[in-house]
Length: 262
Image (cartoon, rainbow, N blue to C red; front, side, top):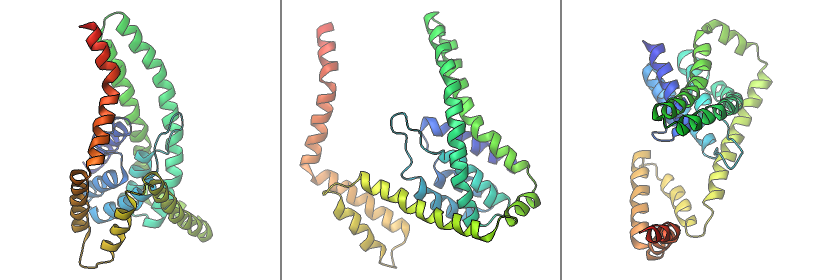
């Protein structure tokens, strides 16, 4: 039953890598779910939190495809929560798995091109079921690209995995752990660079000030951040005005077409 639940999480993570509806592919979610179903929630949350800092800066920009957060999250969680691998080694392995997942993602998306043509042909024939079948097949392939590697990792005996990890020289594992720390910093820096606007910097430093208070836990900090965000939106008229203008500008062309049609 445990293996079935883990594979189900892997399938959902593969789906969400494309859908982005419930964020099952995010490390903090995928690793936590696998930790829960395997009876190691603390390890899953700790691993997911560490990997989430790395994945914060991962995003698809134009034709550039980001490393696969879904595969690295699921695979590393299986290693740590099911195989008993050390947390640092699991995080280091996640980096290699993310690159491997990137290759699998490219392969699946290349296959999906053929499915798009199949959907176009079905649409020309007026077959709604054919279009739906093409879309569901493409989505299933995205799920299988995570499920199949996850099943292979689960099938490998624990002693084989541990023996392979023990055979790695200490200088390699130390270097990977150090590199993993650098990658976390780089991912966080990419996020900071995207939000680098003078109006948001005060909130950034305010977060560090709140974090220095030992009496405040993460839940309290999250509530404070949410309240500040709501207050900022309500008290910033120029923000609201810009949103209205942007919405109106985006709808001008469509409104003109509708008016001409009417």
